[in-house]
Image (cartoon, rainbow, N blue to C red):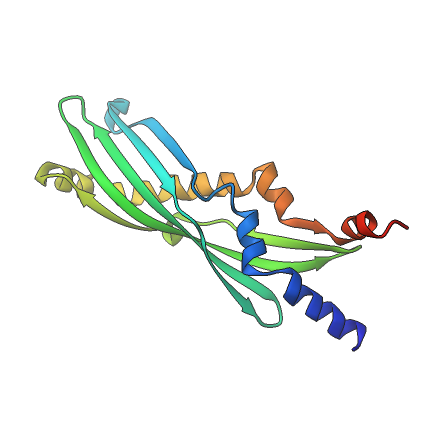
Length: 180
């Protein structure tokens, strides 16, 4: 086996769906609150959301580069407080993340994460009542949900825990098991 063949085979064995999933465990099962956010004229409308992130679904693609598609399922309970009325929405969604695995000098594996844009986020919104449905379209609630979720997930993938999990220092790991 050549060094090149060994290196390629090493990558294919070292970088699996399970290992990538472990890197994103801090996001999975996370519940968080967004808001209340002041919106509308004079900030009179308050928006609050309770978000649950489910277990990621991960698909690996082995081509010239090893890439992954990670899909983070979401469940959101959204409340829009109009002062006179509180409108409720149930939202389901998916945030897709594209990952690319790279070899980095001197001897590391880096996992690059493309952060999601609002247009990448998929949501399904169920309104509770006719008034909620009208406000949903007038206030472009779906687009705002996508924007806020994309921003939050982008911030999360830049946290020290996720960034550290996306860098594997092979030389350091070898030194631990085979001191120089």
